[in-house]
Length: 89
Image 1: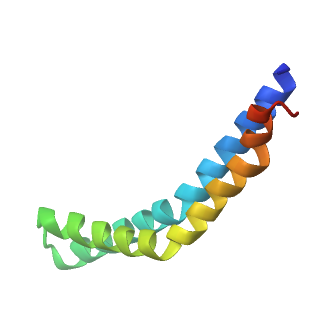
Image 2: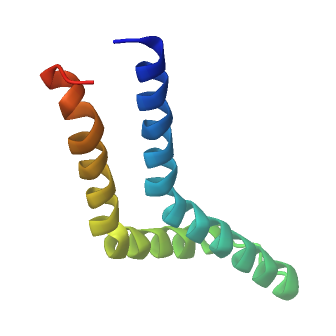
């Protein structure tokens, strides 16, 4: 395996990780801003108010986007890693 092949596989693996994690991170960011705005407007400083809605939204998004995440990961493995393991380039 050449250095170019290694870097290309590494780049594609990192991009797959970004694609897989993006929906959950985006929802966590949006929910954090919304809850923070709600807390600032109402002066309610309950600790569970910051945690429970964010986790609930992330679980819902994970459930909805699980097929996309699985398809992305399987595609990366079958298109890039399996041919390298089998001896192709």
